[in-house]
Image (tube, rainbow, N blue to C red; front, side, top):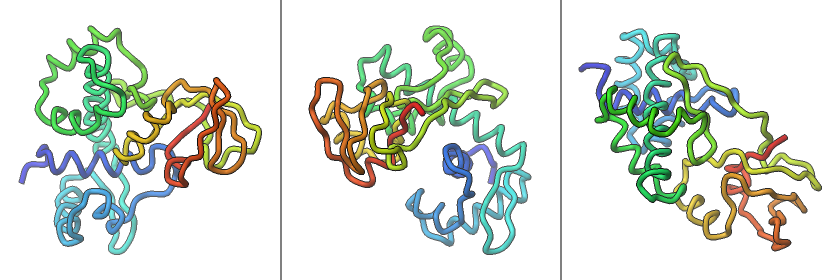
Length: 214
């Protein structure tokens, strides 16, 4: 099996994304849950990725990317986030609709087309959800941000990132007029005030999906 298959790319991207906004590496069981596959499938792919020098793993331990794996993962992330940005800016999609489309397109787009899209967009630094877009060498600039669930009462900040992991949460937040760029005041755990004074009560999962300017 070649390690450039969509399945291998999805594994690497998920391992990377798990630690992008928090420090704890992902475990094989958590990876299986995130990808919706059987633990046995993860075991098989982990062996192949480790043999290919893309991840480091000890039995029953967490998974970490090697430098080569990191570059491969950020290349996939870069394609995904540029495609999302293109879909919003050029194709009329809303920010909460693009994740699944990008999941499909990221595995088939050519480097030439990706470069043309990036030029067309003016080399954006973040995607529509606020996630930074890695440069070709894997570097990125992550904003100084605090998780809404951890923000102190009275904290006022602009939404700089919303996790695209759960489509239902994205739809609910869009319906509540909470999106990237929205300025929120934290009233209490799970409750925020919008700029127009309206109050929104958010689920725990939603509050753990939103990052505000620190």
